[in-house]
Image (tube, rainbow, N blue to C red; front, side):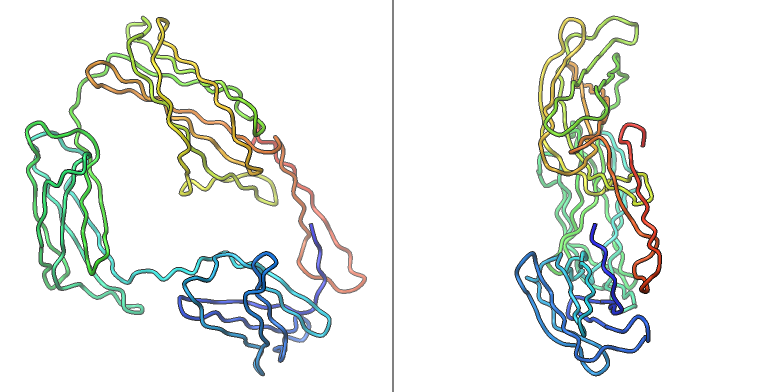
Length: 344
């Protein structure tokens, strides 16, 4: 862990058009005139320049600029650095909100839906008055509804769809096109039938090193106790990045879940199916999500879920200091944290 003692610092701000940096002396709070600014991606220098009389450096951003890069500031033998993580994203000003009267339907049901559209203009929300192209697609991507709807003065419109008698079961999508941009919402169509069996999933061990194997066992039984031995198994494996707090503890990026693979099989006479999964080597830490589904001959499906953690080590060690810069002769306190993946 590098430790830098410096008397200069900077803050950055950016939007979809401009990047701004303000540099100052941390001891006197004076702005830094003529400080050298360097933006690097690995070993490649992207942009170089100097701060103006007010300590400000700015440049116009471009869509092709990378999302992550190093920012380095030099002044009179002192150095300060940081990294930029925020992506160069220009968010669309259009906003579309799609609602259905409920999330789940059966064949022959009537689906009522409502759409609210608007435009963000600075800090103001303006209702969209115009036409929206609306399509509803079934799980096989067959179009069941295709109309052009006009919004009222509040930016809303609504309509309905009667589902077919033998509607395809699964996830349906409502797609709304506004100014060549598409927004979506989903709803489900299912036929309810009381299940006759249950599914349990066992994953061992719970923490492994990358490159090692995990034993995944799917077990299915009738509710009256006998093994359910006529089911088809589908196993889906995905993962989420696992990060560590410097003070100890872990957290998962649930929104960044990544699908890895799907495996199929059949239950044996004991109602079991066993699969050994070899964890890929990445050098990072992940929580792996295992989702098992068992389907009977009539298409009724039951699910089981489990997880395990994997990484280059079963422990994570981090160092931190009590603050970021020091005066000469001042004592530096260094804290060491060790996280046990099996207990965290």
